[in-house]
Structure formats: C-alpha cells, structure tokens
Image (cartoon, rainbow, N blue to C red; front, side, top):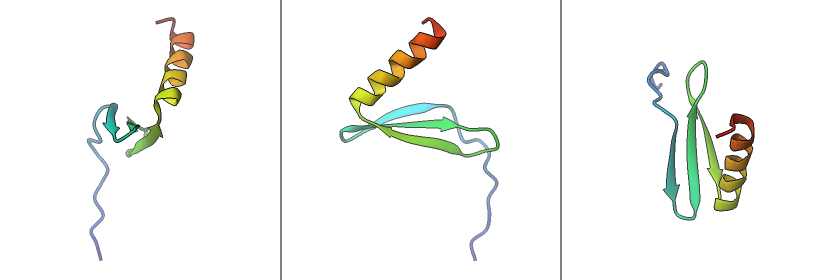
Length: 56
C-alpha cells in the first residue's frame, strides 16, 4: 500500500510547450493543480478573455 503524501508546495502557475500543445498548470485552493492542454488558438482566445476583464 502506497503512503499518502500531503499536497503542499504545488508551485506557481506555469505554462510549458509539449509537442504542439501548451500545458498550463494552475495551483488550486486546497492543494493540487488544475492542468489544461491548449492549442495555440485556444491560448490566444484565453488571452483575449483575460485582457478583456483585466484591462491589460
């Protein structure tokens, strides 16, 4: 039986390129990470949405 380890220190938000995909890892409350696989068009659409709400 494997030992259960607490989820601490999951690290900052990061994006890496793997093949043709972008992998975005976002830390979430309570531990763990949300992992998203995006293509270039989806990443551009996400950027536009974020710029729209942040004004940046």
